[in-house]
Length: 134
Image 1: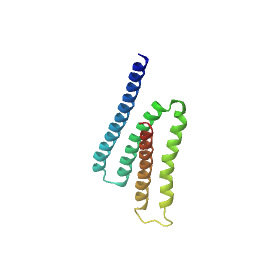
Image 2: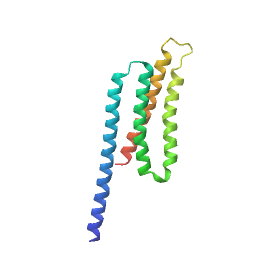
Image 3: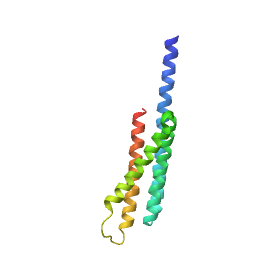
Image 4: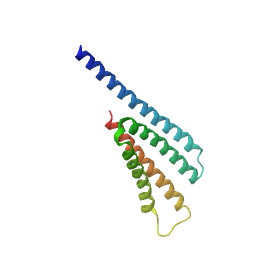
């Protein structure tokens, strides 16, 4: 009976983990769909940056959910490290691409690239969290 109870508990726990991961994947797909729709409406560099930032925030919300659920004891530290990681990605791109002399659209291009770097960092972190919690 103990073995049966143990197997049932393990199956329940494993199915819960799989269900949670599928929820996170669905949340990511919702973020991506919203990004695709919003990016079609963006006409200026500022609007493009805002759309990318919104996509990043959507992914950050998922990261927060995972960290809160799976890393309760170190939630605050992990969250702070995640924020520093994504902000650093944007800063590095901005600093590297900032030219000594600028043509009229360079600020727009750098802003878009920095926002994209921040999103890429958030996406990479989220994907790694999900792969560790299979």
